[in-house]
Length: 236
Ligand SMILES: [Mg+2]
Image (tube, rainbow, N blue to C red; front, side, top):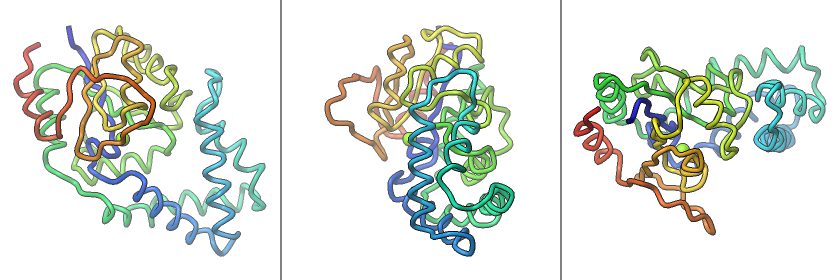
């Protein structure tokens, strides 16, 4: 019996070309720190530290802690100078990135329909971003105030997609078995790998990220409008 819906954000609930969005994000954050350090080096270090965070599977250390421990070793700016500028970026510049996404009212309808049917709803976005950046993206689709069962931020979580530990930690936090959950996302690997823990999977195809050599077959697939239909017809 299905009790929780895990919804990916980028390219799923929030329509976007994820690679194009990330390029704009890196360009923008690079510009924002340009008075402190070389923007190109900064973004290279940012991506390298993000990769370290994604590979780390130490359950005692949050993604945020892994990221900053690695990143601060790489950059030539002291933490007390850099951290306020990065925090300021997420408040003042990150909201401008909305123009590189394609918000649709379908997202809010999906979440509210699932909630009305008694399902717990989780924003299962890859926890590589701080809460401010996730809340802002939820704002673009009118969902920043919704009482989600869980939003996977980098402060809270200890694993990233595609680590299976990411999904295991969600199940633990919800107190549910894999069979009681469905993962909904646009990435043929990072979202569908949830099936290894027994979760049902729905591949959303509007901004599909295909993965060569990965052979997870989703239980269901369709575009976002079809997923709304699916959840509207769902009987608990
Ligand atoms: Mg995605």
